[in-house]
Image (cartoon, rainbow, N blue to C red; front, side, top):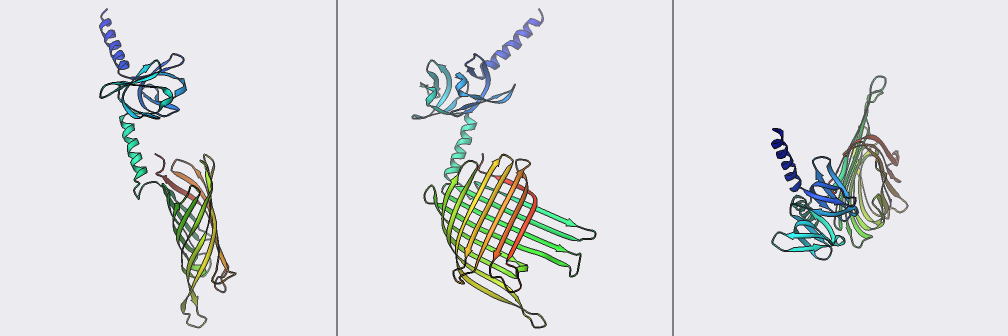
Length: 367
């Protein structure tokens, strides 16, 4: 008998805790209690102490009751705020300022508690008035290879890419680099030293049609290329886009300025520069696809005929395949090719890079 008061106290506390919790009744008669965080047209998110976060199919729910005010979004009537109670034809919203509103289940598009509503408002503000540092997605990759013993070589490759898509505008920056040295045979020194970078802006004119502008830079020591500067633009077409990938087609024109080092044949050797200015046409495509959850593919190709020195051309090819190991960490394989049909005498026209490494990715578009 001495335990009876304590038992009654415990039962009273449990009853009070249940009474103060939100409640969901299912078609099979089961009742779930907890805190309703939000809901959309398909599911309701219930936060519980006994099972964590639970997503419940709305089609299985017959009644919802809350002890906290909820922000209720309706199809044709905007938004109302208040506590929810079950009704014969759906829900009753007991408005905070007084009065009630009866809501049919098919007209309810969203539910949010106060914290979820504030987060939703912040996201709407971010979408309607994006800052320059919003909506970026991309990666930074690193590859290192070293050999010692009978061979002594070191190779370092890096790459970075970032894209910002906000509304009708898209902005992208890219950078690739490779540096290699060897001390196995004379003369010791560099065996590769190349860098490329670009900046591009797109603007959608229609759902499928867009315009773009591009500015790119290239350096290649063993091509004797001091600097290539390209400024151009044109039109593009979104040929295909789904949740898993996209395909863009592009065409336009460029202005290209190339500065080369030229080694004189006299001794002592002297270096002079040779500059080539040309107008170019440009045609290309960009493709991205994620066939599986743990495989991402990307490919970009540009064919660029020279209109000043007709018959000459160049092309750029970049491909990557990455396998996510964690949400932000990936194993990466990349291949890059830069071809020039009219290099300086004695130089090869095609430089390729094959890299294996790891990369860290980031994505501000998913909140």
